[in-house]
Image (cartoon, rainbow, N blue to C red; front, side, top):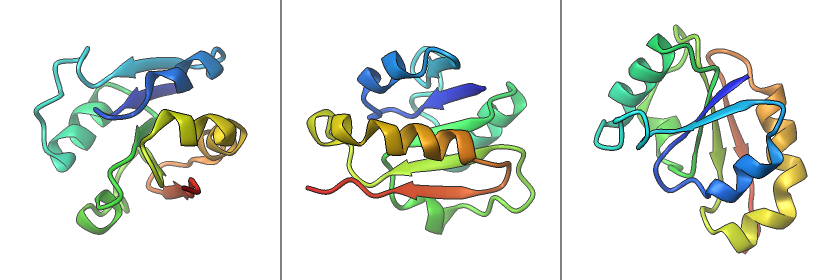
Length: 107
């Protein structure tokens, strides 16, 4: 699976995704794109999933005609995400084109 990390997504998650290819939006030169532009660029580049902590994206974007899935982290802080890595991995592997999945991260 080809996964794009949005800006603000902790890189520590990538260490747990060794069976997948992870790229950063910044590495792709997409760190200044808006959500719609970022989704289009990622989709055109063949990404399967966008991993983000932007909780507003589900309300701003319609994925019904998209080939990409979006997994949203309920919090972007690595110390809070780290104990929830299993749930993040399950969400990434369950993601299907045109879907949003939210992983709740307790404070």
